[in-house]
Amino acid sequence: MGSIMKLYYEWEIQVLVLLSFMLQMFLFFAGSLRRRGINSFLRFFTWIAYLGADLVAVYTLGYLSRHEDATTGLSFFWAPFLLIHLGGQDTITALAMEDNKLWLRHLLTLFMQVVLALYVFWKSIDKHGVELLVSDVFVFAAGIIKYGERVWSLKCGSFETLQGSTGQQYKQQVPGEVAEDPYSHIVCAVLHRMPRVFRIFTARSGDSGNVIQQTPSNWVKRMRLELGMMYDDLYTKSCVLRTRSGIILRCISQVSVLVALVLFLTSDKRRYNRADIAITWSLFVGCFLLEVCATFILIMSPWSWAWLKMRRCGMLAKLSWFLLCSGIGWPERKPYLNSIGQYNFHRWLDSGSDQPRSYSRRAMTTVIKSLVNLVGVKEDKMLFWMSRLLDTEHVEADKETMECVVKGITDFHAEINRDPRQWPKLGGIVQELQDIREDFGGKVALVHFITEAHLRKYPLHPPSDMETDTGTSCSVLVEVCRKLSNYMAYLLVTHPSLLPLNDSALYTLEKMAHLFPHLIDEQQDSEGFFSIEPSMETLQELVDIWTKLLIYAATKSRPELHAAHLARGGELITFAWLFLSHNFLGDSEVIKVQLTNANQRGTIAYVFGNPAPR
Image 1 (spheres, helix red, strand yellow):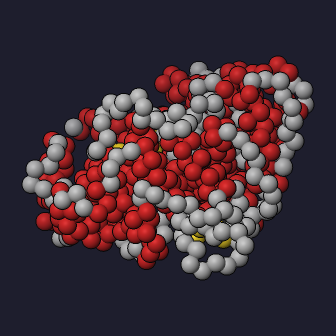
Image 2 (cartoon, rainbow, N blue to C red):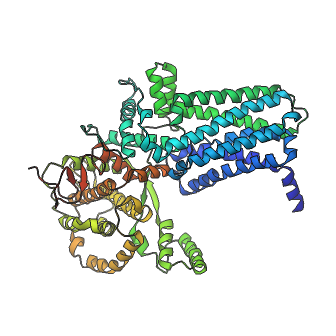
Image 3 (cartoon, rainbow, N blue to C red):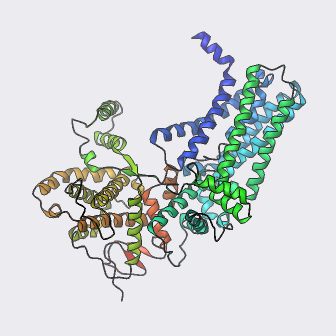
């Protein structure tokens, strides 16, 4: 053991520098995947790498400043590379909106670490050749610029900065008519509407206008693009690299690295350790490769494509479009929001059972109960946390579900000045929802339970004559209905801040647990809501009810919460909220949204029962 520790101390600085470099490599590629949504394990490792990268780089700079022998070898040369590492990667500047709020702290850290790196350089001036020192100066320039870009990006992504901004960064010239495939028309339309998207996310009073007529499929593509582009501006360096100053600084840093590489190549390195020379080469090559990859990511941006198109850079514009449409860019199919969270209340009701349904659940139950005995956590909270951890899952955000939400919002907007909608099949459920403001979570849980019971009445392979007027099959509607029901339950359990709740999710679920035996008896007796016979009309009304519940919840949510959830791959409720805002519906828009028309006042749309025109 002693020999291992001795070996580690001899190579500690080399290990730390390589570790810092590998963390940056991981963050670059993991960050590029975040926009599409990543699983919990990769998200956890990204979080560890994000926090650990700064810690390792700062510690290594401190090590270089404290140890005199670090300035005699080639390791002094690595100090500015650590500044480059502290500057982070283009694909990830912040993990959450809270990180953007800390931009002033990063500015202070920038000043302190630059001073520390300069101190290391100053101690090494009389110990190394001129070519090597000049090469290090150019790496210093690149490191300071890269770290400055990160601080700038964090500042641009903070909600306070967004609210104080005029949105000038979105007022870029966009090509009007393009001859490429139809997807290019969607991209241009999104770029034209980004100033409006910016105002929506900054909670500014919406401007009035006409709603653009699009097919549900095109609206889904547009919304996904808009959400993905807002994600880039909040959590990457995209916003900075669209400015003239940002591009100039990026060019200076890249040229500085190339000049430093040439000077290092021509310098006399015979007196230095071969391993240190190899590590230095690795840092140069790695930095160069990451810059090349970052350049390609910049080129594949929709903004870059529009900029090149407007300046008639034919070949570069074609390259940009090819990369944009590729699987690593902004593919037409799913550039953002690829999954929908799911949770079923039956799993919570079964969480206290003595026979968990899987081995992983039994193992987790044993571990958590042991922790409960140690720290004294209440058992109900333990079961809730365990159920939320084990029973939450994500499914594909399929075309049918997304278009169903778009169609539901479009129909809701069209119903505003019409007679109240009738619910011939599910009028009783709608009546039950009239007092939803008093207990939104409880009503969601109740309708969720009714939905689960009703969907079991439909056959796995329904006859072909069970179709809607639009050709939608029964099985598709059942799947869409179940996804929307489970998604609202998922929001209640995992993201209650996105819902207009008066009680906690745990309290709501405990009430459902007490109500559960009564609902079981009612279901077995086929009374009340459970006596409704299955039909395509009933199924369509049930889907519409869930869509309207999603609409109401979306209009009552806050923009800053939606901006925060973009970091996790986005939420369906954010998609609905943005589309509602495009239809001028919402608390910060022209038309407010309420539940019933009991108190008619102003320009208000009612989810369950709109007032007839006067």
